[in-house]
Length: 233
Image (tube, rainbow, N blue to C red):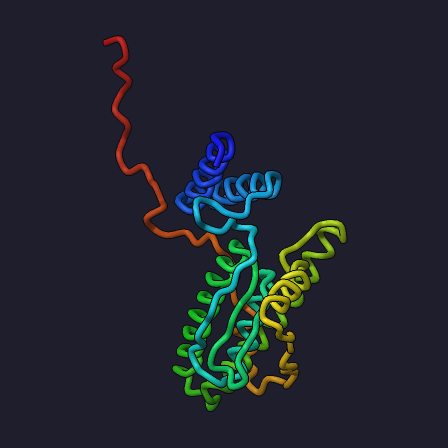
């Protein structure tokens, strides 16, 4: 590796470290965007042995409940939102996701948060003595998230215009890349059934996809009076 390229990669790595280490979402987004721009501009496909954030890669995922179609619906919604593509085994006991390194990172985060919100919503609903069954509620939740993602993507497309590339626009290219390597065909399960749990559907429709959660440790509050300025004394 020549000195200029090594210097460029070190700058990118520092920007990515800043993006991952700062508590300020705006600063993280700016650093990450600068790193991605440098990667694209200089056609960098590897960072010190690690794939660049814009490189396509594959990640395996084991569902919480093997064989449950509602979990496929939920994972597919998260994948669609983040621009990733889901592949699944015949009995739905394992999935593979394809996408860029950065988009898969966002996918992991969002799917984890969706599951946390699903569990919290189910426990709250169960405490009220509802007759909904667990998987019935979860299917409603997944369909609610699916509907919210569809609406959100439509709003995003309308707001930015057709010329702006969204993560979801890359899915066709990712499919071609994945299927060329493994000789498989992408199939959609086509789960169009109507949810039977209104409470689950409502919970899914109110789920949050926010990444920049504010933790108490990030808050800095002045609790004492500043000492007087003694400069020159």
